[in-house]
Each structure stands twice: as C-alpha cells, then as structure tokens.
Image (cartoon, rainbow, N blue to C red; front, side):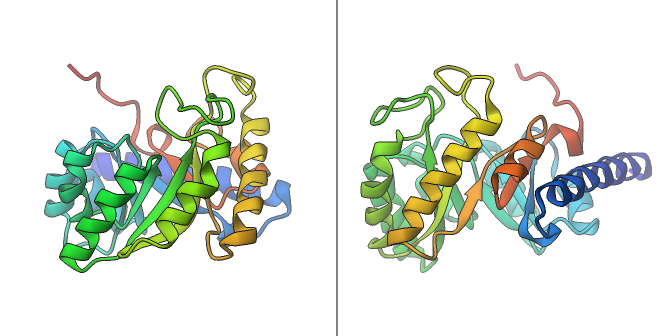
Length: 239
C-alpha cells in the first residue's frame, strides 16, 4: 500500500501543479478551481488514500460500483459526485450517497430525484449536463441537453423540493462543430453559464475538463475539473 500511496501522491502533486499553472496563466486564484477525482473502476482503498492526501471531492459514473464504494467510505469527509448517465430506476440508490448529480438532462429525472430527496430528507445539488454535440435542442451521444433546453430544465430543478440548482456541466464533444476544439467548447459553456446566472444567480458551478484538457477548461473559466487517470493511473480494461 505504501507504493500505491506514493504513486497516487506523486500523480496528485503533478495534477495540482498543472491546475496551479493553468490558473496562473489565466490570471485566476488557485482556490477558484476545485479538483474532483474520478474514482470509477478503482477500489475503496484508493479513495481512502485520496482522502488522507486531502482530496475532498470524488466522482463515480455507475451506481452499481459507486453505491458499495460510498458505503465503505462513509466515514470519510468526502463529497460524492455522480457524473454518469442516470436512469430513473437508479435514483433511489444514488440519492443515498451523492451530494451532487452532474448529469441532469431531462425533466423525468428531475422529478424522480426530487421525490427521492424529499423522501429521505436530503438536499441534492444538480448540474444541467449540456450537450454541445446536440444542436440547439437535441440530446447528446453521451447524454446531456442541447443549449436551448437549459433554461426550462434549470427552472424545473430550481423549483423542485429537495434539489439545489448548482450550475452546468459538459464533456468535450467528439462530434459536431466543437469536436477537437475543447477550448471553444468550454468557452461556449461559460457563455451559457453567464446566461443561466442572469435568472439563477447562485448557479455558479461550471464543471468541465478532464485529465487531457483541464488546462483549456481552467482557461475558459471552469470552477471544477474532473480528473481520473492523471491521478489514479490508466484504468484496467473492463470486461
């Protein structure tokens, strides 16, 4: 475990250096950007190491893996983010541990999240997942709502019991006009965030950027970056 701890600590330090350098280049204070470590496919032991090293935000994208891991780590001072496409039949489980759901992209999901949050007496933060490969009003290949659908969905979240509208999230698209143009995609997300904050001033969170493109996200103004492999290493193949 000492070797693994040393590996994670070294990787985490390098990612911190990258974030700090990106903030400096953008003229932003380092504290404006929160690191979320994506722990999918990695064991609870790694989550414990991350916590010991000062990480406070972790993310998962599959409930069947996340639920038992979160339960095993329930004693740790962590905020859990759910970042994967979420089916309504998994909502009861996810609301049990997730502090923030970053992949809210349809009204039926909002209704289900609200109902369950009220039932268990929790407040769940919600990010609208924006699909920049979906045109104005379509849906993205990896989930998300087109820019034209943000306002209606955000209004629904804001007036739903048990939910808190925190902001927007996106994944750099693989197709469409922003394919291969991460900086432009993240700048578009920031424009959409500015528009959203006109009607929902507290929805200030902007989640964008991963291991390969966190610098572009920080340059565009992201408040949160989601980093997995750069901290924990290349994931084992599934299957």
